[in-house]
Image (tube, rainbow, N blue to C red; front, side, top):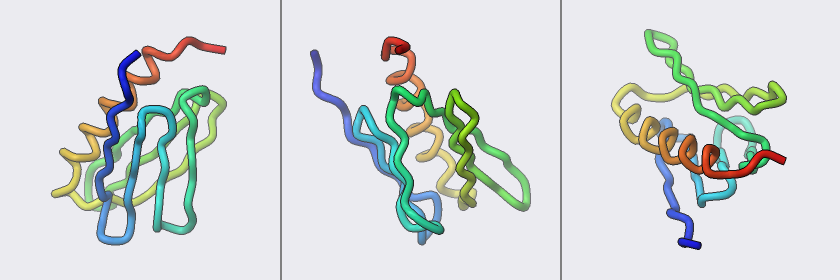
Length: 92
């Protein structure tokens, strides 16, 4: 088994997303939030003037945060890493 790759990226000056290979965490928006891989989280992005990133789980839990446009590439890289880890995790 390979060790997980730690990935973190800001969504804006006051928001940080962090993924350690098992848990996606959000720091600094309204409150902190954690999403374990067994929840099968995914990131969705809404572009435009009111940009939002949403973390959605298989059970419909949703956490929406604003993001800055210039930080989108880092968020997309984190989303790809998260999606790969979710796909490699057996469903329970």
